[in-house]
Image (cartoon, rainbow, N blue to C red; front, top):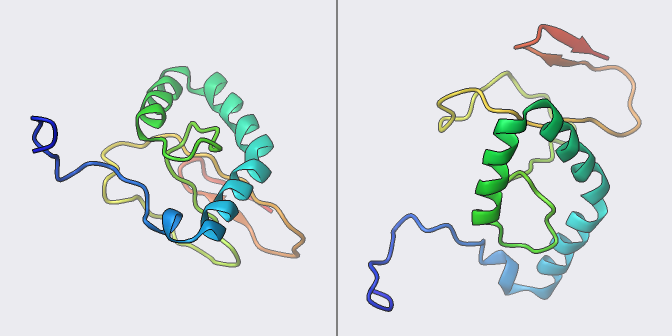
Length: 122
C-alpha cells in the first residue's frame, strides 16, 4: 500500500535506462527534438484522417507520457533499419488501429507493401 492505496502490478513506468545514464536521457531528448517536425506533421494527418481515434490516442498518450520532449500522440515508436519484416499484428491488437509509417534515406530497390490496402510503394 502506498498512501492508503493498493499498488497496481500493472502500473506503467519508464525504463530504468533513462535514469542510469545522463547520456541515455540526453540521447532520447535529442531524438524526440530532432524528429518533432515529422511526428507533428504525421499527428496532424492522423487527426484529420481519423478524428475519433486521434482523441483516444491523445488521451492514452497524456496518461502514459514519461518524456516531456515527446510531442505524441503515439505511446511508442519503432525504427526499422535495413530490415525486411513480414506482415504481422501485435498480440495485444484486438482490432486494427491506425499507425504511422514513413521511409527515409538513400536507397535503391526495395518496396513497401501495405497488405491491407494492397498497395506497393517503390
